Image (cartoon, rainbow, N blue to C red):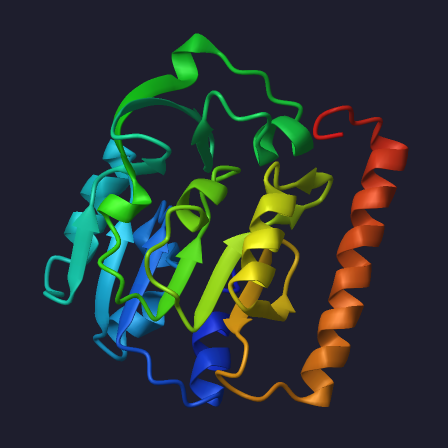
Length: 235
C-alpha cells in the first residue's frame, strides 16, 4: 500500500453500501498507515490485525488501546505453525525464503544477517474464523500464504500484487484462486489489486475503464523499468 491511499478502500466500499461487519488486515506495519483504519476508527467495526514485527506490535497496541473492537494476532501468516525468519529492510519486512520481495526487485537489496529476525508463524486457517467480510493483505511477497489458507470468502479482498519492476512471486496462483472462487478485479493502484466477490455489487462503466487504464499503466511501467533498469530479479 502506498502512503496517501489509506482512505480509498474505505470510500470505495462505502460507495457500494456493502454490509461489512468484520475487517481484517494482514501486514499492518504502522497502525496509522493501516489500509482499514477508517473502518476501525470511524465505524468501530470488528477488526482483526495480523502483524509479526515486535516494533509494529508495540505501536499497534498503543495506538488502538482504546479500541476494544480491535484484535491483534502477533504472528506471520505462512504455510506452517512454528517459527519463521523475516528480513526487515526499511519499511519492507519479508520472509527470507521467498523467491524475491519488492525490496530485492526494486531496490536491489541483498539479505544481510543483521537484518533478519525470527517470529512465530501460523497457517492462516488457524487465524481465520470464516467471518471476514473485507480482507487487506500486504506481506511483501507472501500474500499467497494468506489467500491459499483463507476460510472466509470476503466481499472484498485487497492484495499487494505489483510495484515498479516488482510482480508478486505468486501472482499466477493468486489470480487463479480468485477466478476459481468467483472473484473479479474491481480496481487497482500502483501496488495493489482489489478484488470483489462477483455479484456482490454492480460495477460501473467508469470503473471498468479506470481499471483497464490502470492495468495498462502498471504493465507498461513494469516493462519500462525492466527495459531501462537492467533488473534481473523476478524474471
